[in-house]
Image (cartoon, rainbow over all chains, first blue to last red):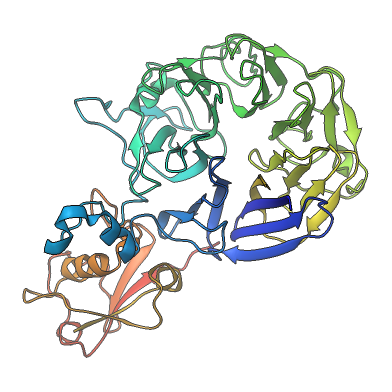
Length: 403
Length: 99
């Protein structure tokens, strides 16, 4: 029977929420990786049992976890002894390990003379130049076809790639090496590459977004990149229409329409119909066009969801009312979705990676809050129910629709 | 055998309970020799105590031995004799900090 698996990353561990296709009764599993910050957990579209998780603390740094059984058990790729033996090949008899051991958390910027870029600096909070330093993986994006191929968006902003199921990671240095790099600067959450969108119709085409540099696109599999920020207007940077420097919070795409992108920016909800070449504002009648997540209905490419937040100075919903806003017209006209959501005294935030949709009919919509609730709507947003109420602050929500 | 006490989160990653016992070979027992042997036996700990490339200790990890904070001892200096003999453990500590 069809099932739903919701993958939740929190400040203190990962949780897995499961239901059948009715999406009425839920089981909660976890915490996995208890006590660690889990910025993102995402399954492979090609193999739903293959799931990747980004695990981090300030004390012990980055760890990558991988599951091959839908999140029941986990391993650090390249660490279990059977992983070495299975990959030792002809040298197994000599006890030599061909595959790297324990390198699944080795994210080293490519400064090689062959294809890398020098480790340059970017603009620091005080205006001085600051060297690029790896801090954490914000987002893991498995490929549509290959469960072993995954992209990782990291802080300080760069894009990494694994082709061996997470055992080793290599930077795609053309992005960090873009001539605009020294003008990038960190947002309040650090200089993070938080959004990775793979064009399902063109494996050479990838969209990414960085706070606070903006959106970029490659059309050649990550070799070269260009900023795609024309039409963005950001009053918090010296030149509001600059090529880079915009604090893009999130971009969403319907898989059938990869040229149409929806963006929640640090103020302004935006839309592009030419693969990001140009953008126009679709905030329309939203009570606030500040916010973090944005997503698109699974079956209606012109139905878009956002969660308005009062302002950049006050990261909570306007008037203490938690409202998802839905546009069925691709923007401009928005309706509040409130049924089942707290309509007074609510001061939680919904972070950029904490909203997702399933692909059942009707489409399910899910989001998590910094107050630890994960809300589900089995009817496209018409009504909401909390699956869980008291998790640690939710950093990310992903959904798998299981056959 | 050298005894090493790991903090909670690293014991979980390495899937061990209690102390770890390591054979660090015949050379001098140093902080580097202990960590090298630890990472060889438990590759999942690579990068969590020391940076992969620079081998620098992560800022919020500390090392204690025989009631002393030996965090800032040179990595190639001999550890206290009681640690080298296995009488006392080498402790890897997650610094006390908020979170």
